[in-house]
Length: 417
Picture (cartoon, rainbow, N blue to C red):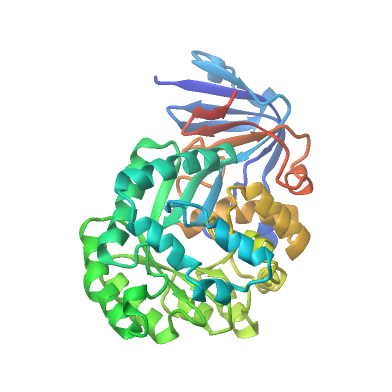
């Protein structure tokens, strides 16, 4: 028998045990809460969970170590299903301009925005980008996130997009944080092809996607399908090519304008439609009747002082809602899923259980990880976090969440005591 860990003295354990598929409607409020609980971990996986007084006596034998939850709240590690973590420097000039009243479009027209990060990535080596990425991954873990989806998109040519994805692959091999990679070559048109968007779409389809798939560098492909970026038809072409190459789809949808991109995501069988700030009744109904997750990113709305996406309408219609940080250097420099949960509850009127499930079980499902992550049940990885709190509602009540006592990945403490 290998390593056995007993986690005891858990005030509230949120198991989130439920259907393997996406949680919708009333299922979004079922936390599977166990009070005065314990968890037995064997070889990095959950072996048993329940009330501590009911734990079978043989389960206590031959333990390697004990972990004390100190009466706190234990739940699955967060699954952050939308991030952009590979870049060289923060966009502080953009931030100053925004504070002075400049708009998103004005900043981009002046050479800021996505293209500012592109210039940094293109001028950096893999080693430079890896050195910048590693402390960010540590900060995700310290904030309670144990899995992220991570996009490229600041290279905008084959050489640099592949460089970003190779950096993510290497980082995933030596980090405790699990990383699911997404190719986002269609993030913007590069400056050297300004005014030649059709030529760039052709390069993404004919050059980049085959190379990404050939090196098995990404699980998903994504497109920024929005006003001023890529059209519905262009996104359809790119995602069809990605599917033919064996990549699944995600989609930036209806953030800046209502373009119908969310309906395209459903049409293409995408795993998620992300942002949805401008989604209307048709998009909401389409998502509610589909297996495409509605991924909401309220930290970017907070940072940009923009209206929030229609979370309540999506939930009430029966859509499978997820939450993510949108961590990126320009519009959402946020590592904290607990802050996102606070925003979801206070600004989008999500109930606390809905927000927690959106940040864990549903997010894991949207990344195809429902068999290994997102809940606390036997056979799944022991990806767990423990808050210094008496009640799970404190996660949303305290802006940014109460203090984390510890973070566990695959049965090993990776942060805290």
